[in-house]
Length: 201
Image 1 (cartoon, rainbow, N blue to C red):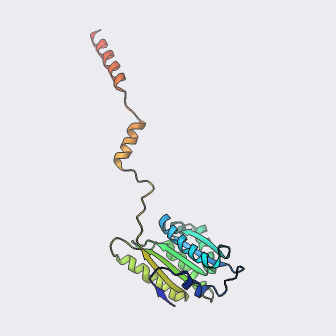
Image 2: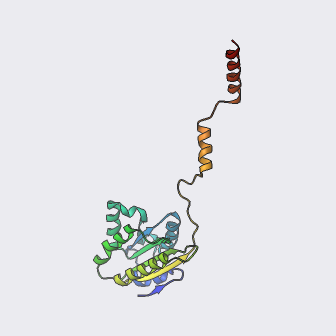
Image 3: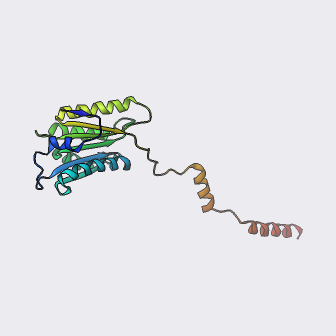
């Protein structure tokens, strides 16, 4: 088993998992990704592989990391991993890997049959080195060793994605003010005149 930390070379992957490049051969690829940026990174890698064997020869399934906590999604992701020739894991892992990821791996790794396959890890580098990141690398390397995968790892920096609800408190307050406007200056003037008339009456 080889472990590499340079840019992923599609030819190196296919050396292990594609004994034949005939159009009838379907290359099964399972991708687990964390967010939109890591999905795009994984897509670029898969497209480079497909460029060598032809897109018609590649079958790719995509699974979002957070969705693995759903039982139905987990079952589907386990099923495709059992048959995959290439497993791509595109993660940030700055805070470590979530529990559903370990459950997913433990559900398919002991049950894979003999055969050649590759584990491709696309790991986003944090701003500062973290112990959790190193542990994630070590875990993925251990998975590759246990499954007898060819292990390829690529690392790069990706911009952090903003949360879906990124409105600041000041913007929220502004929106609330516009949604529930107070009386206009003209209405306030009329109210004040009515109050004076009522006071003199």
